[in-house]
Image: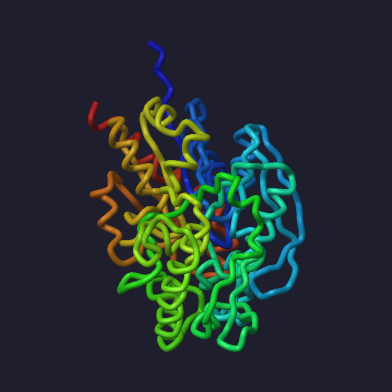
Length: 386
């Protein structure tokens, strides 16, 4: 009697500074085929608005990438891009022009980096005739509240002497007046959607400077400086521009160092990123067809359940009654919380302690080997159960 091949949906995130989501999916599939060469493996690489979003959505919809040079997070022009999807939507991936990967480790100062290039890409997208623009937030190297993006779109940010503010979040403490008279009028006619993590808010105890500032290189003193600057920014934004949400605490306002708040002040809609992004890959139907779902990310920890890809995959797979295995480069504090999100089992891909540069360089190899080990254990359990 013939045996029905196991059906596995492989739905990972990328591994920052190491593997794209596509590369991670292919590495997992390589390990799975060593054990079950006849398995039906559905590769569903996922993006969360950060690195790789524009390219992934272009590929999924028959769209294309548009290459441009734009102002990088350090104020220096960098090669960048946005996507034009098959339906005419433009996708501006903020990480492509203002991402943390564009800031060398020895120059990481979130008080001085800018989102100016994001505004330049939005203008470039408008120049193509796009009237629906999706801004993907994630993997940012900035904490300027979207001030740079607004300046690139024609908004003037002035100090009490009438001088334009310099780039960076710390400059916002000097803000005295916002002049929106020069705002590109096309932004009012365009539908601007921001795909963001709704858990990220601009201000308060869990504001973006406090939660993510240290990851971007901020010292404890700088964290407090940026928190105060963003509070000041929110007050002036609310008074000057037609936002329809509370720019301090509305879900998503803290996305990408506060870019969400800056764009919301222009009337952009802040939307849970997976509600926007995953429709393009028909994720729910593909998970429901599987016998097993494998997801992966660089780190699993207590933050995973707050809007990260493995938690979203697990939530949707649980609804379909499909078990989920999660693989990660590191397992951090609070990792046990992922079980409540629907992850049935999880493990690290690193077989032994290795230096971080080596782990990043060999991530594909480690991921393939970990997938092989995991599937052997799954199939052993299946035989015992039978």
